[in-house]
Length: 509
Image (cartoon, rainbow, N blue to C red; front, side, top):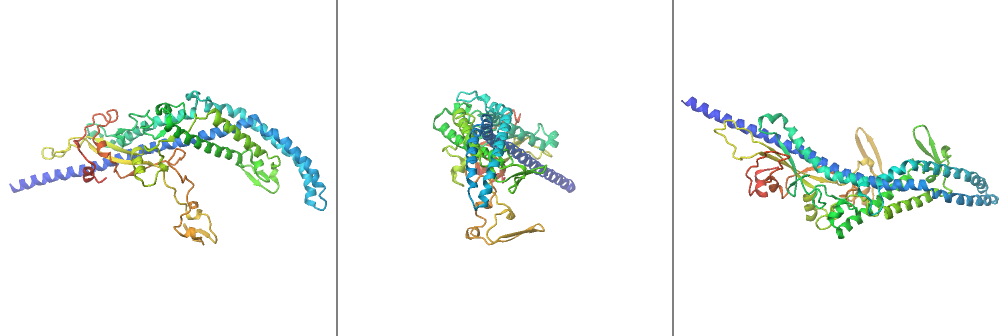
């Protein structure tokens, strides 16, 4: 009889050990599914933000290229070159009268010989750019779409694409969350009444992509199209809020467009290189190299000041595009303001307002739902939860802080030296006080990422990070029924009245 009693006790203990082991294993699998699904969904959201930032840059460069090729079509700068070179031809004989100065006497014939050559360079460049303009301008202007305040918004192709990104990204993130989470536990599907399902929740206690995506003040992606003919402008209803978005967008677009226009003009690898640099260029069959000594077979053309004239007229073409044809249309998307009317980059780092904005607009919680495991010896062991097993993960969509360069990429200070051997860097440098105090503290030591107001849609470095699940809305999210389209038949445990303190006491995540 004692043997039977002991065997019965050991059988019950075996069942208990099996239940505990299976529950622990199940919890690990569930948490891994939540982590994988939520992080993958966050990557989709970050890529959506980067897509908006990239197309904001693309739109600015589109304006710059259009201005460039419009000047190539109109050839305004070329018209002033003959008069300038004629003045040089008049000046050249004056150097011949500089007796006793051989360099000046040689300069006169050199100028006379160079004038027709430079005129030929200007003519050939203008003809080449005019031919390019015939090919490029129709495509560029069709992407920009109809000019004017009443231009068809559907003809502005980049904003149309951006609005589609804003609408589609939350849906793609939600589908990614569900699919990655369910695949993570695909091997255990047969043991449950239904497969595992996952939902990406916003901290406004609503599923991403399910509702309010047309509302610019509540949508998942915190981006607003401030163009005067956009759906967002109509929903904002005009007023000071829309004007504030437009002011920032117009200024950012102009700054970027001017930057890209200058890049097109000044880069020595583009067609205007001979007009910018002294000397010339040689071509070895694979690349151009600057040859300041003898011109390398390509003449430098600076006497005509053609590149200065080109800058003036392309800038005029850009002003025409930005100020008159598309003054408040084809604007870049902007990051949504906080409730106080500020951008994240304008807030004090670590402030309560910034933290609240991050938790509201840039924080997400992924939750996975799975039916409870069947208990071993269910007559003796019962799961008192009475609903699905759940696990959750919180993520933030962020812009990383500027990171320090490797030491061998630091700018050298006075008396500094660097050596690299055996995978180790050694430095022997004499820094000034500014370098020593808090080294490395100067901006030169950091990567070239935005240092002021980086939380905007001109920054293409958005990424996702997993964070401790401390959002104040987490208890409410766990007690909200998931959409049936994502998790059909979900059964929530009875968590009514669960507070954040209660949650932290029973869950260490």
